[in-house]
Amino acid sequence: MTELKPLQFARWTVLLALMGILSLFGPSIRPALAQTKSEYSRTEDVIYGRKFGMALTLDVFQPNAPNGHGIVFLVDGGSFSSHDATPNMVHVNPDSYKAFLASGYTVFAVVLSSQPEFTIPDIIQDLHRAVRFIRYNAREYGVNPGRLGIMGSSSGGHLALMIGTQGAKGRADAKDPVDRENSAVGAVACFFPPMDFLNWGAPGVDAVGLASMAPLQAAFGPRSYTEEGRQILGKEISPLYFVTSHLPPTLIIHGDADQVVPLQQSEAFVNRAQEVGAPPVNLIVRKGKGHGWGDFWNSKEDLELFVGWFDLHLRGITKRDGAEGGAEVNR
Image 1: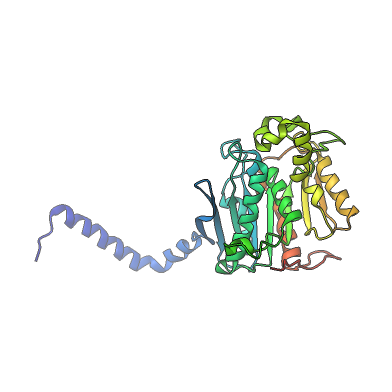
Image 2: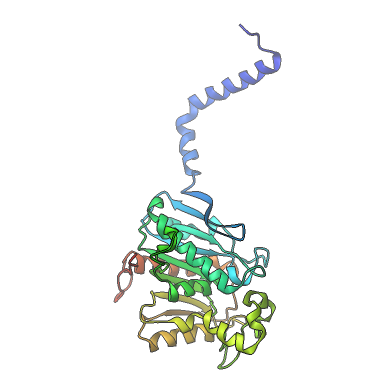
């Protein structure tokens, strides 16, 4: 038999002592350990696409008690900002998803390419790819592929509404089966999104790389250098010009003191939805609030509204009189 050295003997003595303690007090210790167990699982860096040698990724957050519905969460506002832009920029942060996970939603936190390397039209296509990838793989994550919602803030809200207004079936002849999927969603909820870059705060005010968007001109690309290019690009990337009667149920929260994205943007979107006979857009105006207020993705009041919106329009759970049921996307 091999003789234990003094140091090895000491380590074994400590280990056996700990095992003895756990055997004596285990029943009282285990409940405490259970209380700290995560209420969700996380799958990191799932690759949903590639471009120019770069992997496009998303993280999947699955609650322990799923309700079978999924929400696409747009990270970092994608199109107008890099990951290091400001301390308030949204990142992949489980704390921001707690309200949704607690309600049983599986959250897909999508990281998009960003400026200055890529422009807004590029990034919109990335998002179509991400939604199609999520729908194609939805059942693997216990999610109904026809019951997806999407949410974002600022430029992330803009992108969410580009999907809300332009989500569509993929090409039936696409080589990649992911690209054959539908990129439409069943409900949208967002904070202070840009809607019409050609009428920014007032009719005829061009913000395609100009006005308050001038510091972000790289996101608009070279077409923003000429008036003719701006007119074409401005319509191409503005959700307002794609609103139809098939618009999914949409909730917008916007501050009336926003100096970056004017409240007029959301008001114009509401009016356009009424003009084309789309389902009513619910606009909630926060008095005295600017472009973001504190850690708004952890605002209990606002997130409860978002959760309630998805409950109503994805799950058909009515929480107020006269509410309609869920909206399902056909594959």
